[in-house]
Length: 102
Image (cartoon, rainbow, N blue to C red; front, side, top):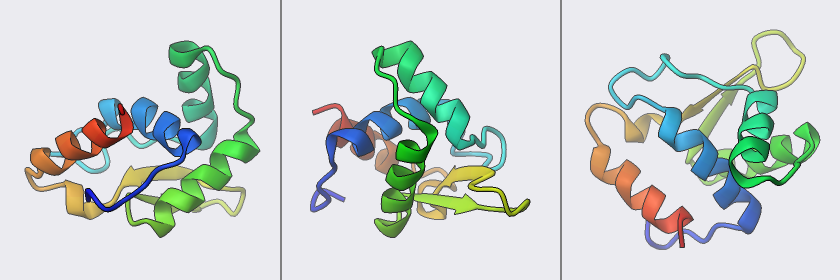
């Protein structure tokens, strides 16, 4: 985990996504692109277009941090933390939050 480097946008997405997740229930707090865009605006007063956030989510999926599913063929409908973070892996979540808060 410590070898990962995150861009400013990746950090923003993760800072606004991770705190809403329940690592004991992977499906409890799924989000979509629009929700994350709104959270970033509300919490960090920066407006990111959904298309920008979608690209950032794609990058985080490639880094095996997030998983995105498209059940309705209209974009990322559901965004989750990668399954490595579940089953009581709070230490991984804490480590990730420490990285994105730098």
